[in-house]
Length: 398
Image (spheres, rainbow, N blue to C red):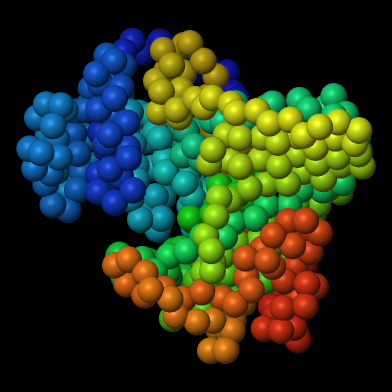
């Protein structure tokens, strides 16, 4: 998951940063920039937002230049790097706008809504000679290499497969947060704002990283089953089964319609044990035959901090575009699959939510967990709404 330190002249902190998208999820980036600015690692030079941030929002960040024109902001501020946290379908244009001006990038996940656009970004930053970090923050966890080391040491015997489970809840207001929310396409452009490719994309990318299958060529085929309980275009209840180029199996079951939401996790199955990894908590539990369960909690490297260290010649880049190629092969399979099947009204119920009601799929929590336990798809687990013609047969990732 690393690449050599940045070529050419090392950049010495504090590095000038422009943030594109400072509200919504972008607030987390703004807070992180504030933290690193206080430590003397970065300096916020500019913000690109449709509506300017006020003094309270900019507390502790000085008076950065603000603009709705990203290209013009880059020209006037001449930053060292840009953080792009904007709608998915804008990533390609903004990433290439920065790369063409020699500006290094932290690009929020998912990097692009299609394989073709992902290749445009990867090729564009490589041609421009700039560094690009993809914002899969879970891949900055020290637990990922620790789990891989346990596997290499034979802690659970022969690896038999990896299953990921994510049972989250999003109320109906979540799909009204922006015009692109819950869409597969918008005005003819791919968006792909589904459970597997956006909110629970970390489950996909992290499971593949634990398997050691991170590059595009590491994915041989992908089976998809996409469903929706909400009145949206994209999937909110889905599963995929990935066969890697070396024959390993990785499944991911995800829902935004959980009855009792819980922490997403990844299970690594072995011939003599299992490893369970709660990736948001950086927590690992090791079960081995003949041993008491052991639990460990790990630290995490912040990806913006790693990018700054990389540009200073002090570290390898943790999540370059090549390290997300396998994820993008899965995203492309989701994009090319038939539109998600609407669940019948009897398959879900409305529950109180905040600030709006939410839809919960009956029995989905158990199905998601069973998928991770057995590496099975929903249809194979007997879900009545998943029976019949499969939404998508195995598709080659080539």
